[in-house]
Length: 352
Ligand code: CP3
Image (tube, rainbow, N blue to C red):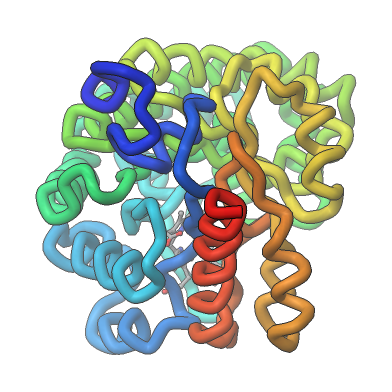
């Protein structure tokens, strides 16, 4: 919790490095972690996956905690993101889904009409307590050594999964509802805010130090549509989580045109994808916010000398990460090498 780390003086060594960076407090070196740091690129994860489905891992706190802890320890990162999935809140809202091999998530009865929106439940967020139990285990394991990150989807991105029934290229159904029945669209976002706020509260009470809100597909909206159809809902969720006493990271992909508006939600940290240089992205966000990012995840396949150049971009007030998730096939040793580079970079600077 923020209260714990913010107590006392602004000493470089007090509290957790990652949480301090989220709050733009001085740090001894740039903290580092990776989007999708627990995943198929890692042998230990594949071993667990041989015996359990993705959703089984999420729903068994012992397993979810183990996968979370193993990845964070193997990489030597400064934060552990709880192993869960963006889609989990759909189930207690009355929308069952499954992950089909090679296809990603499939929602069996997508939301398409005002009647479908009306049927969604908002009173069952407590069913997601298994994620909180996993966070308790991870927090118990790491104590104050690592930042514990809880997460949820942003209203727009989750709504798009509910309406499309899965991933999408053009978001035709989503935008059809958004433009064609704006009242139903707004009701859907409000219902999501209700459930996601309670879900985040469970995670914070269980020991999450920071909440990351994934608006992964927000780049499918132009700036004007972002302002008209998504901004207010994101802002409401960001503020509701901040009132719980933790900083919020707000992340999206293909957001170059949206960064200023995303920052206007008031999120403490804005996650940057890799399309823009870090300093330009930070300028667009504004220096009143921390930033997280933004190495191209495919750079992790590059030879070490290329990696070295890219990794040296770190500077104070910045959380080093990728611009999106680690992909299957990524060499684990390259991920570990980047962690070493980020650590050594700050040490050299501090000593020099
Ligand atoms: O280590 C971590 O980052 C924590 C775990 C995590 C998962 N999903 C596990 C997972 C996190 C943070 C997520 C969030 C998530 N889930 C997002 C937002 C992040 C982003 O990438 O923008 C999204 C869009 C989803 C939805 C989702 N889950 C998709 C589209 C897929 C299929 C992708 C694929 O490559 O198959 C998933 C499956 C999923 N969630 C995997 C993992 C590790 C894939 C591996 C598996 O099936 O075991």
